[in-house]
Image (cartoon, rainbow, N blue to C red):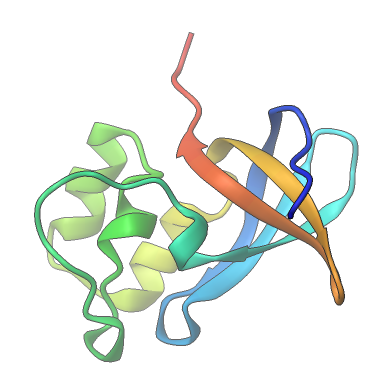
Length: 109
């Protein structure tokens, strides 16, 4: 059974939509692997990674950034908007290193 850490916070370091993964930099400075399946998403729509769209990753952006990503959509612009998005997550220690689980957008205060 996977042992999950307590919730942590951090920011997206980078995310490659076509590859379905990226990395989070925790507030403590640790780099944590992020697979799109670890993003908590219960909205409508589905991912079209070959077309450059991941609705799970889109859910990590705040509403104004989601609108900016969708306006004249381009994958590079979408991926740039994801950089530094604030997230909340848990971590497991996987064979290849730390992996994020239960990743959600961190709400603005």
